Length: 384
Image 1 (cartoon, rainbow, N blue to C red):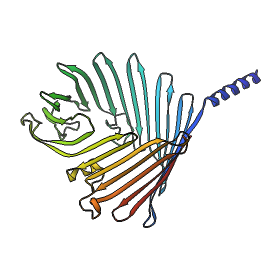
Image 2: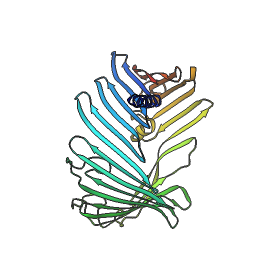
Image 3: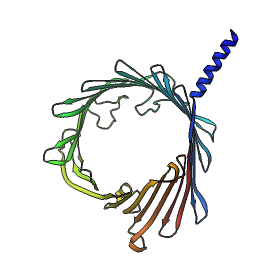
Image 4: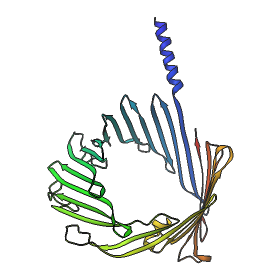
């Protein structure tokens, strides 16, 4: 009998082992300044996944020039009707615990229930929610216990302390496809009710829409101070939005306006339309050409990706490489008003990615300023 039990246990163990799987990746990038020469940066991430019985256990290790920088353990899977996710983070250099988050969810009769537990070693908080839909109506209720809406601790404490609860409903109303209503309660009771609508069309102006926000409150926040933005018995605001149709030319625009009626006393006045820049993008076979032009120095970062340059031109291509890999090549030129080079060229960036099969990719890149080569990047990514 004992021999039979041992044989059954062995067969079950072999069955579980046979269904288990180990996958992962190791990606590393090194940036070198050829002028010094010296390392500018080093980043390496090792990910190992172990999948068994519907669960995936993951270890993520991060390395920088300072050494072993991050260590994270995650687990995702199901137990019966419940789905769980756990994220445990450590600081290897200090040999200390950083934080731990556990999420769980289950659906019952069309209603989804979610819960979150978070601790960073100084306290613990919880957040619970339930959501569902009936026809055009969707509903969500969320409650926080020592945890705010962003998942951060409210106080350094381990008590199950109620802090807030919110009820959110979305539904069509009159000619509006989607109205969002939110009712909030804090530890002192009722806080406010908010109504919001996005994308209200303006007749005869197809590229202009209005976002509306209306709030009724009691004039105090959860601590009774009344210091929150828009806090008061009533608040109304109208925000115009520009929505040009998509095409090969994209305009970066912003409306110049005043008012909006935060307290119901100021009209919304549109005084102008500001064009901060534009983007031209088109494809010729396997080659993509893009041109980004900024007309506003304050918007350079948003449009060209670098605050020092007002113009960027990129040419990129991609194709299949050897043995199931992928090939990508990209060249970008930046221009500035302070450059002394031909055509005001200020910076050149070249990047190359070549797949040696489906499991190994080699990368390289150069950054060339008007004075010298300032960065050479090399790296690889292995998956298994």
